[in-house]
Image 1 (cartoon, rainbow, N blue to C red):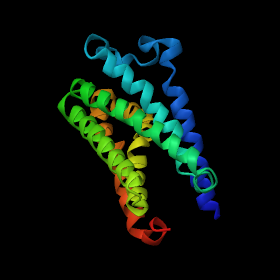
Image 2 (cartoon, rainbow, N blue to C red; image 1 turned 60 degrees about the vertical axis):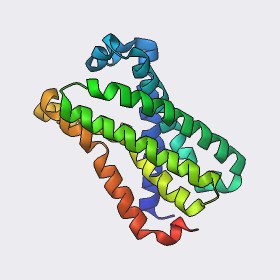
Image 3 (cartoon, one colour; image 1 turned 90 degrees about the horizontal axis):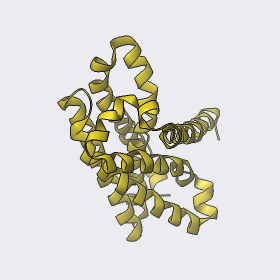
Length: 202
């Protein structure tokens, strides 16, 4: 494995697990202290909000395990079971995201970005699972990479927020980040898939 690939693997594992753990801080601190910008959801679809913020980190924490070639080859049964948990977590978190997206802070642009993210997240993951169940492994791998790119929006959002808010302020940055946290991820995934057709068929 090249140094570049080792770095990518390290970043996938460290950032996925770190962001997942940090995302569960509301379990200890409560929403008001840990996510003050999200408090408006407490007056609306509270259960959908909790479903999203609890189960999305579950999917994120499982992701590096599912992307591990070593685990997939040596522990196929575990890979399948973790895939089921990943899919259920995204189903719950994605539906929660669809419900709370229209109430996103800063208005319609942010709401549309997050709503489309949840929609594509559900569709890509559903297709990946459907192809796996039908033994269409090449198609499964292609769609799970798209799903992974969207799951990693949780990471890119948290990397972008301090910079965006620090430079432009929350009101200006948040609508942009609602799109920037996932559109570039998906573009990179499509670029990767276009460059690695043989890998997808392996």
